[in-house]
Image (cartoon, rainbow, N blue to C red):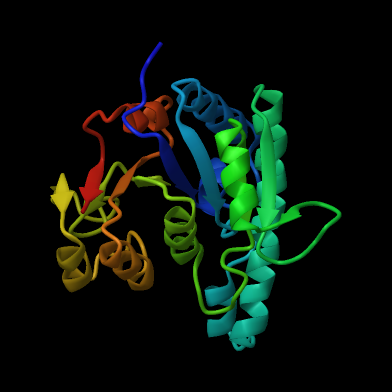
Length: 237
């Protein structure tokens, strides 16, 4: 059996990743692939927390640029992450994983309230904990929520799963000569204005010396490779 290089990690999944080629909504095929990959990673003995975004359903920032009140649109985005969290929970449990969904916004009928000590206990018991509703506050992204939850649960690394195989100096889909970085410092990422994670999340990770590994989620097995410590994607530290 493969052995994990980490005891505990925080996996950050973008909402867009759940949409697959559709660009919106939830693709069941993608859900099953993610669940299979997470199960393989979990079987290494690694404890897994997951933060999920909501961009496949509703993006608060985009709505606010069109005249909607920013706080209100951000709360709507938080509710979108809860929909995704429940979809992930169903897929994980069908794959044989024990899970708990915790929400930063109280909604007792569908999720536990986020309580740090309870989350730690779930992780110690081998359950995958899905953190929804971001930080529970407007003006903060789910990237920032991932950095915050990672620190709170004493994770050793943030695994940022995206649709790109690492960090580039510019969009590789638009520029064939885009340069990929294997390693980056937090300062370089901030100075270069690279938009893999927002500046608040990067600064929070830098202040607490928490490494970030960003890689392509669409390649089956990549979550396991990252958890085993294989060279994959881009590491920011």
